[in-house]
Image (tube, rainbow, N blue to C red; front, side, top):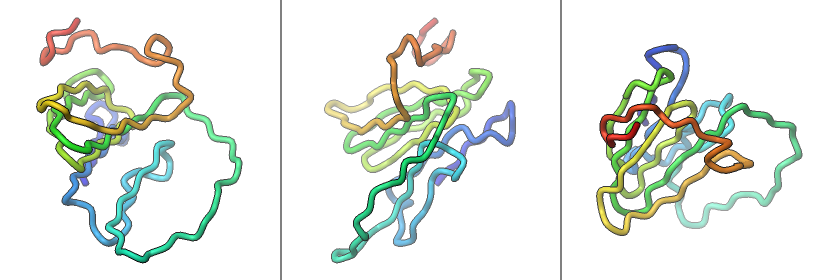
Length: 144
């Protein structure tokens, strides 16, 4: 697991990258308890059971969308940005890899045909216009 912290505000966790090969038999929490988007990993043997349950109603409030991608197959190039919109990480994710964005700006480029992934985000989601601020200049993609 790789934790990326802001260079602008050093105590702010921007994102976590977890590679498929990092998953072990021990439960690993990828998200700190304080974050709204929670994720953990564990290799589980056949026959293990989890007691049936449901979750209690709790008041939870967040002021921003957090999201994660789990790559099922293929390859994507991910660009991650610090709080001041400066590029902080350029990395590739492949099958089984996961990225969890708590505060990082982000963009990605699909590098292989038929790449598939799951995207998770905190909700409710009211669409791009309400939720997103685009990074003004993205030299990698030539966007302004």
